[in-house]
Length: 168
Image 1: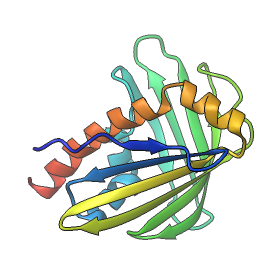
Image 2: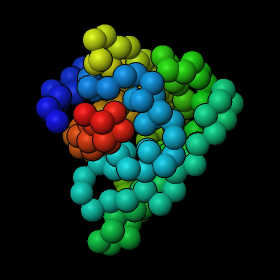
Image 3: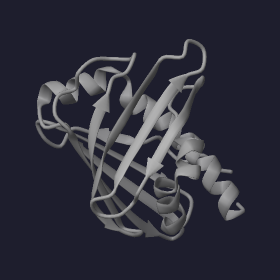
């Protein structure tokens, strides 16, 4: 499996983070990896040593989700929850994102808005994620946690999962 380039991260607005990443797979498979709990639990993990004991997703407009991660070494936990505001398979997915600090981190303010756009060309799917944290302070606080490094660690796992599922 040929490794894809790391995600590109930019700050397009006062409160936004934009993350763009390519995957060597049809967008239908990538979309499934973002919307099926049994697949999400396999790749959306961040650094080694974390698992995802809670991954509940009702992927429809108005449907809710709940994700919770646990550090296997010390048992600390944190999570996110929210509701889907746009579901247009396999092209777009948007949701609110409330942070539940659990044992990790502090208050991140009001809910962020997360929008994913998926496009495909020549067997490569580009996922563009825009997260609007609503304030510069909340955005900078999230970035200071190493959020985008953790996302890239998950994307590397997603590369492997997609290669397995597409038979490449």
